[in-house]
Length: 475
Image (tube, rainbow, N blue to C red; front, side, top):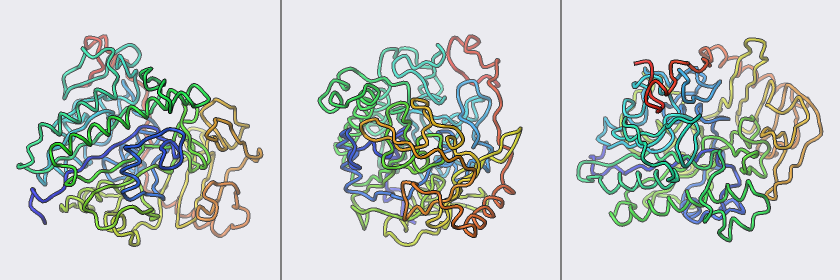
């Protein structure tokens, strides 16, 4: 194992709701030069899967487990929601601290805040600057009229009017500036609010030539949001260079789910959007960059899942010991598969698992090799889709037009993703043996899941009880 000084810094960007075709390295109408630089120089993860919405993905990233094994697949954890990632589960930050890493969390948490124990500075992070919930206003940092913004555990109430992308970029820059590299490396979890709704960006970004040329308004604003985040990443890169740290830093870039087409995101040519089980909802934009990696500038086509990040970061990048059996990890150390394009240890991905309950028929999705099975309702298959509803069973083109498939409701969908990556043809009837095989795997996971939790918002969380600030309320 290398000594602390030889271990790389790790900077993990999580861009909220980023679509498959929202970055210009994929041909988007939005120019993202800084993101493009690291993607084009780095290792592009082409068969990388996330969950259909944010809290489940973030729990998988942080814990190395499928959300179905933690009761977290069913819902998004918002302010006032008495739910969180289980306290008996380790985190990336916990494990890296054991190896001498300084750990910082910036931006969106979304993994629990009903007691202090569920918040970042109690889950292995030395510092936190951000918000506990799932979404809020970019300028007044409020949810339902109440502030959700913290510096460590202290409420931040003097930044009303400051765009959150600027705040979070500055917090990341400060963490880099203050870091004492002689005491060991850092891990920064940089979870930008962008580009999640509400659609808000400084007018100067919306008006720039790149964004102003986009033909519809939501996409123009979305463009401004993403351009601001790309500029933030550029500023952070300059700080790393000024401190001579960039070449000693591994950069990981990921979204938490597919783009929300009702709010300006584009997943073209993939089918569907956020909250669907089509590829547009669960195939994630992701890449890895490091100037000292042995193999760069290539498309990695190994199956990778968000739950793989914890063992990949801890065992692969930091070269620390990790007790996978103790933590019952679902993820694998993908570092050899990523850096040298060798065969992945992962043969399958459980994309979604909502067992039938309370009259709900349930929905599940499984990827095994080239095959992908969806059972139940992939959100849009049983009713003609309504344009603008945010749930599109079809393909959104870059110009905003919607291409709809024939209305053919089904409870069983089978695709060969290698041959049909845009899921144009349901071939379930042609391959009953494959359907049976994948259904058996889903039934296996059904036998291992724990009850999916979705408690209602707790009225005791009312911020009026805490000076108008969203605050852990059960301590």
